[in-house]
Amino acid sequence: MLQNYDQDSPTWTVRGSGSTEMSQVRLILERQWLHGVLLVALLAALALASGLELMQAGILRGISTPEWFCLAVAIAIVHQVYVWFCWRTQLHGSWLTRVFGNQGFPAYAMGFSILGILRVLAVFVLAISNRDTLPIDLTALRILAIIALIPAVYLFYSVKRYFSVSRAFGIDHFDEAYRSLPFVRKGIFRFTRNGMYTYGLLILWVPALWYASVAALCVALFNHIYIWVHYYSTELPDMKHIYGEARATARDGSD
Image (cartoon, rainbow, N blue to C red; front, side):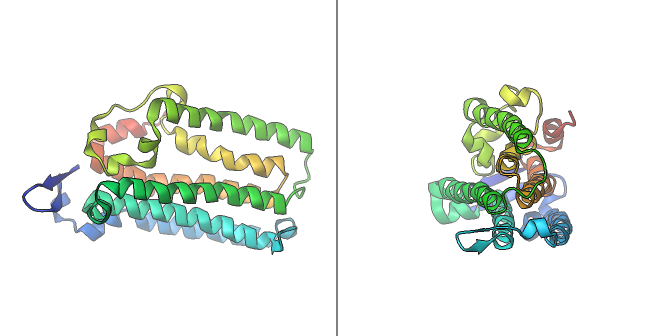
């Protein structure tokens, strides 16, 4: 299913089987019930884990580990809600390009980048605040950290060389020209069709393992699960609208 821009009238319509009967709001909120339910479940699990003594140990810059923990989780949630809101309102209503014109995607990308960087930095800070709380040999943990870093770095290299940062940010929600491009099967994408979800979040495991932080490990795990919540509740439905059911299913393909 694709959007069609009517040049005679500045409105977007959605064409496809049954789609014209769906309101814009319903399209924007599509499968967000799943997002909400799974997020509540994840937050409940984190609330239980946060009561552990090891999760509360440490302080950095006058801020306690539980406070850094809450901040790291909050940034992750804000980041993914931001992406959902921007993607859906642009895809089904062209809101950002109506407001910002040709600067719609750059404006979105700037917000995405700021939140993405803060998301990573928050886990690093949390790991330092809660360091040495995981009772496992530090050398072994740092070896694991390096192992986790390797595919994450290879992913970023593959994105830059073969995929493009713009496509990784979701420019196909903004520019129809990108919708005819073939899916990338080079670099890390030779091994998995969901490289960014499988390997990208490994970057958050690096500080948690390097500093032997129980709290940071919990947040890294939360992030890794939560990014898949985003995939199934937001990105995959969007792909079906943008590329059509058959092509989106081929892209999703269970490897």
